[in-house]
Image (cartoon, rainbow, N blue to C red; front, side, top):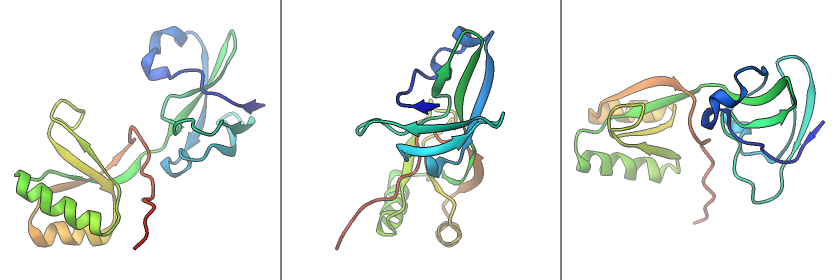
Length: 157
């Protein structure tokens, strides 16, 4: 089976498919950015994903296929991340600048998010953890399913 479009997202309409049998394509977040790939469901079914150019990244809960009784959805593995909880805007600016110089991707969340505070989240890196310890910025190391994948920043000097 070739998947050429995303049919919706299970998280946006959870009750609509409550009676369907759910089959999962379990992916690490690094593969969410690939438009063309071969995947296998947790039931051993092989699928090809070939999304058109301009299609957004895959996300947790994306519906790949559906019939009267079954639904195939993307299930994203948790990512090892650092949740950085700067105490002031100055502290956040200094940390963000330092991480930007390393070309690390970060995602920002406000107090109404699942984090319950204004935080910056980046993929785990031991050098970043060492830096945060050295400057005394509070952080937690967590496993999280991120709403969007971290994407390598293209750049040139």
